[in-house]
Amino acid sequence: MLYIKDIVKTYKRGVRANDGVTIQVGAGEVVGLLGHNGAGKTTLINQVAGLTVPTSGTIRVDGCDPVAEPSKVRRMIAVMPQSHAPLTGVTPRQVIKSMARIRGMSKSAANTRTEELIEALDLGEWADTTGERLSGGVRRLTAFGMAAASPGQVVMLDEPTNDVDPARRRLLWEQIRGLANRGCAVLLVTHNVVEAERSVDRIVVLDSGKVMAEGTAAQLRSRAAGDLRLELTAADIDGLPSLPEHIATAGPPLRASRRLTIALESSAAADALTWAQRLRASQDIDEFSLVPVGLEDVYLDLVGGESTSNGEEEG
Amino acid sequence: MRYWMSSYGLLLGWAGLRGRATLALNLVIQTCLAVGIVVGFAFLVPNLDDATALYLSTGAPVLGLITVGMVIGPQEVASAKQEGIFEFNRSLPVPRSALIASDATIALVTALPGMLAALVVAWLRFDLDLQISPLVVPAILLTAAAAIGIGYGIGYGLAPPIARMVSQLVVFVALMFSPIVFPISRLPDWFASVHLVLPFQYMAESVRDTLSVPPDGVRLLPFAVLAAWSLAGFLVAYRMMARRT
Image (cartoon, rainbow over all chains, first blue to last red; front, side, top):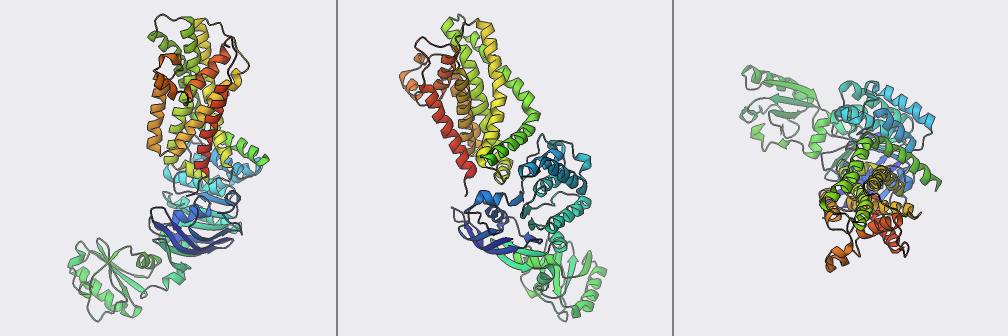
């Protein structure tokens, strides 16, 4: 349904926002696009929407080229932008209905779909409140409703769950899945690795305009070094004693401000646990946890989210 | 064409819905502004003769249209750009020209009541003997279209902070230095020749000559110049709207 092949986008000042990106999203599939700010996610969406022209490469939306036929492609896609939707002076019910109508639905179908979305997203309480009095989360849900009202073949959602409360976040994910079940190809931009791990079919990790990895959450997790992560939290993480040599690590440790994360094979679990308990007893650390490797670990390995320590002696 | 018309109709409803909250306030401000110019400028000129009264009366509604189109217009576009609404609109499955046309229609609807109020107040205040030509309708519509078109050209063509500054400059030049509420003969020659190119004197002339037809009839040159300015403004707006980076 959505076919993106070798997309390169270089801006006039020489900034290469996309560098050979290839992604496919099939009908009924939800693909999560993960990446830091500036990874090239929004540029990619704008190219699919025909707002920006790729420097080279191919994009097809159900066989249509957004470069050659931008207005036709705009009728086949729905975009939920990262920025706030225009809600000042209008209510969620009015905007969702208006968007459904503008996207070609009949009056009665638009009414039905609007009520369906308001109920499904639990927006009833605010459905008739004007935009300037809505919270950020309700505004995001409304913006989702505007895109989902009459979604076309491809739906692109730019950080749809930001600011949304946990209960409605689940409802939102159900609706995203609902779009896929209707046959839409859903491309979803997010920073939230944990959510993506749970809710999307496939994940594409983008960094500096390049696809760093692609696959299901399980496939990406299998790329991680080791099976476990030992996480230590301490006020002075640099002052910790070295990791005993008999505990085999599966990669260089990662340091965040107060946290040290060490990759381990399952076989080292018992020794690592003993060491960590001893550190806590001596009050070198505040707490520790031994957890199975998660997608976040893989993601941070791929895009370098935390600084790696600079030598074995710090392990 | 049917698709364009249906998109235009739906967008008009959408723009109307968004503008509804501020429409009433906008109408009041526009009316006060246009009426204020009639009353206020009369203080500047203590002994009003008929010719001056005619300039004031017919110039005030033109200034009202200029304010809506060339000052409020670019400021609204600048805000829409900064709030991301411009990008959102660009992704909608509608012709871009229909998008601009629907916004322009709302601006026109906002401007007309104030303009009419100014005329009525001027007529009451100065007891004018007007010779109204049917051409007054195209004159007002072209003046409004030129003001809104140029305003959108400024708003879409320039970066938001610059568009805001230019719109301030426009109102200053229009109010104080344009032959709208006074004859062009009062300006220095060099400045009068600048106004041969700018749209202000043609806006004023088309409205004035159709409200009080001169003995030698209504000149058509102002209509042509205003049509050209409207076209240029809307074309810039359309190009920026349809532009792909």
